[in-house]
Amino acid sequence: MKKKIVSQINLREDRLPPGQKWISAPIVYDIVDELPEWDLSKYRFKVWGEVKKPLELSYEEILSLPAVELVADFHCVTRWSVKDIVWEGVQTKTILSMVEPTQDAKFVLVHCLEGYTTNMPIEYLFEEDSILAYKMYGKPIPKRHGFPLRLVVPKLYAWKSAKYVCGLEILKEDVPGFWERRGYNMRGDPWREERYW
Ligand SMILES: Nc1nc2c(c(=O)[nH]1)N[C@H]1C(S)=C(S)[C@@H](COP(=O)(O)O)O[C@H]1N2
Ligand SMILES: [Mo]
Image (cartoon, rainbow, N blue to C red; front, side, top):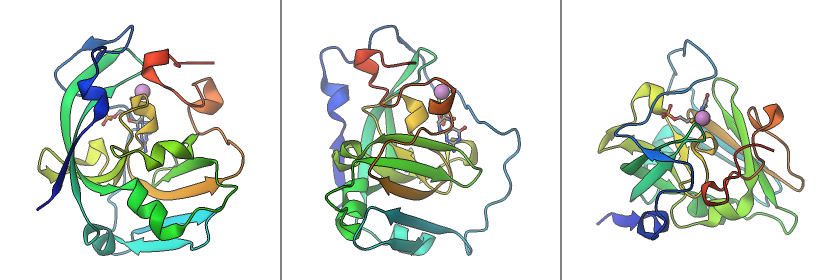
């Protein structure tokens, strides 16, 4: 049976972070207008950097790893939030146990197929409710919501939940991603309203 995880953030008394409003469905945001067709036979998910065992997985190999179902709220820095999105995928802590981060591993820069990047402290990838998702509401993730693979980090603002993920670069020092270079916060905790610098 698949393990079911309800994100701890859904159970908080202050479930809706300060300055946010509930809406019914996530609004698509992308840094590019057009997405190419991803060729799944060529797709590889990679983990490299401050790890003892760098990793490269095909899409099939990702689908064969132990899966969890995650129910988590989603908070966008532009002040909308969506309750109880249902995802399915692999916990990032499972991936980390495969690559064995070194003692110096402190941050991660997430790489995506269309060139988007985002960074965060590595702790967030050890959280129970952080996953690499390939399903949303029981079906393959719709293309614009991140197919073939999406990082979901419910404890941070949605720009950290990178779509079209193809790699995790494990780092000693914090390196800003696409929005972080343009003034978004290096961590982005919605309950501390870490929106911008
Ligand atoms: N690869 C990639 N991931 C991304 C983005 C992007 O442009 N490219 N936008 C981010 C932003 S700013 C937000 S708010 C959420 C939006 O998720 P959605 O498009 O599924 O609603 O995705 C995040 N992940
Ligand atoms: Mo965003």
